[in-house]
Amino acid sequence: MYKNKRIGVIVPALNEERFIATVIIGVPKYVDQIYVIDDRSTDATHEIASELAKGNPERIRVIRHEQNCGVGKSVVTGYKSCLSDNIDIAVVMAGDNQMNPDQIPRLLDPIIEGKADYSAGDRLSDIEHIKGMSPWRQLGNWLLKWLTRIAAWNFNISDPQHGYNAVTRETLMRLNLDHIYPRYGYLNDMLVKLTVARARILYLPMPCVYGSEKSKIRYWHYIPSVSWLLLKDFLWRMKVQLLHRDSSDKSSIPDSVK
Image (tube, rainbow, N blue to C red; front, side, top):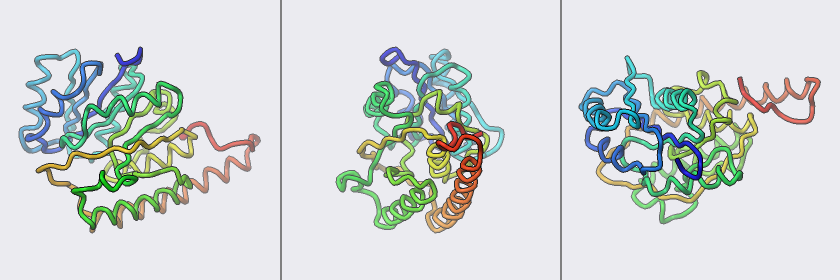
């Protein structure tokens, strides 16, 4: 436990045999549950994670999808597991060792202190934090940041592509997790839905650890597909808010998105 809160760490993984052991072993001792979600890897990811789980089966759970579903679906699988296990705060850490586990308290503390319902790392607010990020990737992140801000109509969103985040159990229960976009782009989609559900979103300056791993994102395909997703999210948000405005309670937007 961390400050009397049960913490779960979700590790979505696809072909991460080089890094998955380091990620699992590096999760701090105060984390109650580790959920490794293997999205039908074709390398030794599942075997390595399962071997580590044998040594601590009460803390480490390996869940394997029957078919490749996408990173968004993997995270949702983890969220549902956290809800089933009465986890208070769910943290998402990628399986590629780009996220420093020492930063987890920075994500947890604002939530525990009642300042946020969802907290996330922000690489884009500090030039030192984007060293190692290619100019093309920087441009893509900047573009998607603004498209996500407009889709959600939330200009506090800083780095929607950064997957290092934490969210409360209560906030997850306000979302329809089955409607979260299943692949890359799920973060953008979720931020729109969190905004409509009136969740308090907080970004914290945080670097990534860029090493020998290679991003699986292909930006020439990713940016157009997520842009289309965000257009649909924008129209959905407008519809939900207009319908709510016409309802008997005209004081606010919905507290939940079901």
